[in-house]
Image 1 (cartoon, one colour):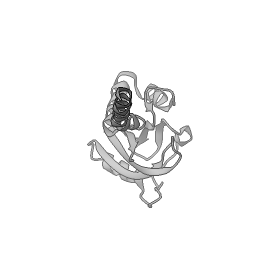
Image 2 (cartoon, one colour):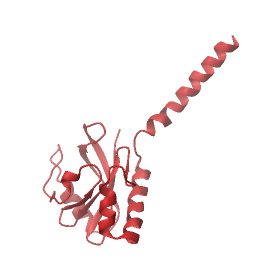
Image 3 (cartoon, one colour):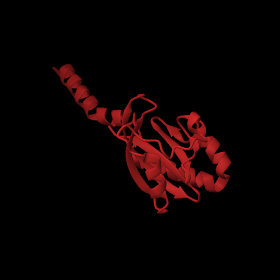
Length: 153
């Protein structure tokens, strides 16, 4: 009977911990905000080129699970991309998500207000390879906008 009760207690405890274990698989909004601010601090200390190269590294300090950073110029050109280096140097101003939302154009317009913001759209998750709803936290800085997003589950 004692062994059975210990087994039940272990199972209950395991189930109680399950949501926090599952949540650790995916980045959170506070983690996205913290990573963007970490990159801005790095930018101020090291300059644009070094920051861009660090953001571009998939094994670098600005990639964590499904969270990565992207930097756009105010012209819509990708300056750095933590998940897809093929995007670097491309003007994505006219790109649209599956719902027809011109999210880069909207992002640049929001960035012109010089205030941090959250933006929702749909994008391919580099981990699941599926198109998923995404929330992107962006902070305008000089002639660029630094963004990090989370996939909404």
